[in-house]
Image (cartoon, rainbow, N blue to C red; front, side, top):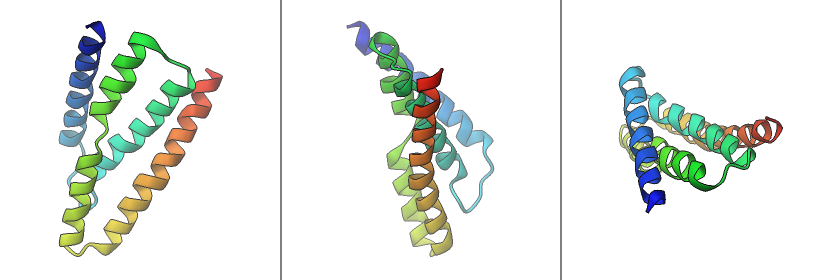
Length: 116
């Protein structure tokens, strides 16, 4: 039962922080807020895994917080909007930035997490 509570509390915290980031980031053609939370989330999750976090802290931080902070569904909706608006350069930058940047962010987090 404690696991459900920890995931819920982490999820609430992650969702609120993502909402805050989206409100603070400037509105541009490129969905900068979603890109920011996904890249930061990739790095932080890599850091969590790299440090070998387990148990209740992992449930709160990785499953709950990071699961709600990052968002694959918003990424895809933003891509569809860019495609519908014929913003092909922004689509390319966003896809490469998200997937390549996310991969590098996760690797950096894992690397740093293992040495902390």
